[in-house]
Amino acid sequence: MLQLTYNNLNWIIPWYASDYITLNHSQKTVFDETLQNVLNWHRETQLPAYATWLDTLQHEVKNKHIYSTGDIASHAQVIHRFYQQLVTTLTPEIIALFSQISQSQAESFFNALAKSNLEWKKKNLNKPPEKHVAERQKNMSERLENWIGPFTKPQQSMIYSWVTSLQPTAPEQLHQRYRWQTRAQALVKTLDHPASKRQAERLLIEPRRLWTQEYARKNEINRQTTLRFLRDIANSLTGAQRQHLIHKLGKLSGTLKALSRQHQQDRQNLPGNL
Image (cartoon, rainbow, N blue to C red; front, top):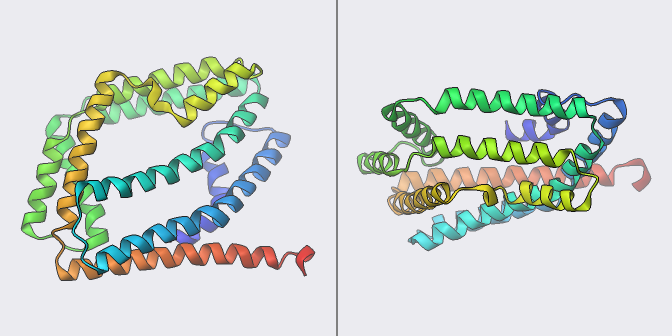
């Protein structure tokens, strides 16, 4: 499924983007060319890096590594760096696109974004606390079970303890979404000025700059809670769960390597390289 989805990102992404903005013919041509260049970069440089990290993780699991909270934090930092590298690469292209769109296109985009925020508010803000807990528990259970297989009773208790220890952040998240949209909407109007472009870059790459102190405080508490939870889960794996995880990590790493190799072979088979 991953391989099929990844191989079709060149039309999945434009299809998704069309919910937010309609491009004219010349804009779409530039967008498609830029997207293909970014996908080529991602296949060539990022997929091998992801696979290398997965191989490291698999090696640790095979050798029954005993994890500390710092170990889990280091792995989380690797994932964050991957994300930041992608955002940093995409940011100039996003700004270039929004520098070329019309006022009506910009208004359409931000109207769609406002609608998305409203839907998020209806879904998350007025939900009873016990429903938040139940949904988080269900989501985490499904994700973990996919990676390690069926849980033990102590692991089920760990999941419940983690869920009930998290700080609620829905109001702060909504406030952050509104602040980000308001700032982005103002900057799009003046992207022809270098100062505005630099501010737009920071807005995309470092959205946390807009976080309130309270939101940052709650996020840090939740981050530390989650690191301890993942440490305890990792150190509680049974032999069967360890083998399940080793298999999943190896399969995902192999898929990423195959996608990267496929891209290299396709490039070598281009007419100009024959």
